[in-house]
Image 1: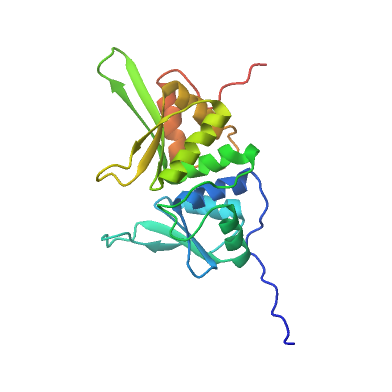
Image 2: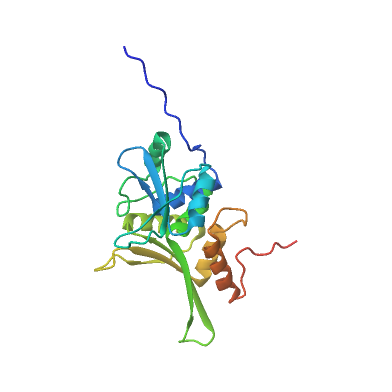
Length: 229
């Protein structure tokens, strides 16, 4: 009987925490699992987000640059590393290669769902606002999550409703619109944002947080309400 090879060692410490759940949210949106069963990559236009991804996973690998589609200029930052154990773990919780249109439920501990959701938001979510001309002094704002997978966007909607009883609404997925958007307006949006950003100390993309704070200030609200003593 031949000798067994060395047991694979993982680069990533697989242990659930707010930081780890945030990283899974990033991977569910902008991550990719190679078909080789080993390599995991993460790509973003935001260098800060790539650095955050490394920080929360406690890894340090080279940050490369790449272009996208027909673009020639390399505007995207990308990190890739091999870790069989982490790769297998990601498969077990619901991620997979070529996940864009088939992603569904991700197995996240209940108490870490909103940390995962903040990672998903920083990856493929956004907020937007405008003054509605139909009513005087009416300022509208929305929080939106985007996915090419209807199954995944429906799962997000169910999980959010289960926790804070806000339903949102889904658009897209028809004719030439290949992505689905889950949207929350005003009061529901504020409730959701405060659950995702439940502490200033947790990892988040700075530019998105600043945009949210500016948006909320217009209606006299704060992302992190002052505590009543």
